[in-house]
Length: 164
Image (cartoon, rainbow, N blue to C red; front, side):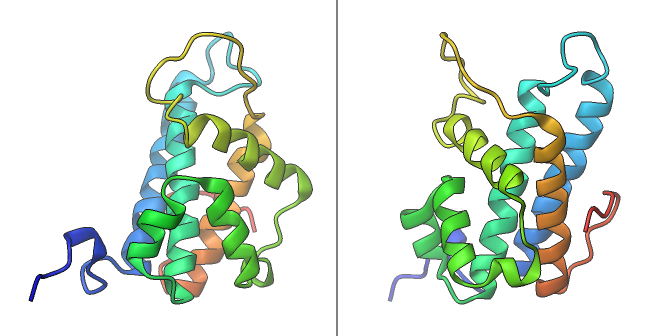
């Protein structure tokens, strides 16, 4: 019998492990923002690498929640992929807002980030005009998600502020 791919083996990829990665990506985003974001030109929109890291953290926080609710790794990979919108919608269906209710503004900036994140525009340049999310509400949403999901799955995020 074929063994599952590493990323589809539930004994190797757990909600706690996924949330730990979410926390570390968010910690890296905040450190990069402290260093780069204080420079002129980044007063409202964070540097692209910071936005990517926050997107990665949000994706993994949502996936940790979905895993803890019984969504399979295979389904996460093939149905939800890197789309924040789809993952957030499913997480809301499964009760995420019983843990942490994101404001309309926080949901809106996640949706806006998803347009850039899921299309890989935060990794590979695509010229032309774009709309970027405001970093303050995005940072708050990522922090709140990470801490709330961490409480659910049994992992206490370290080295990031608690915005709950």
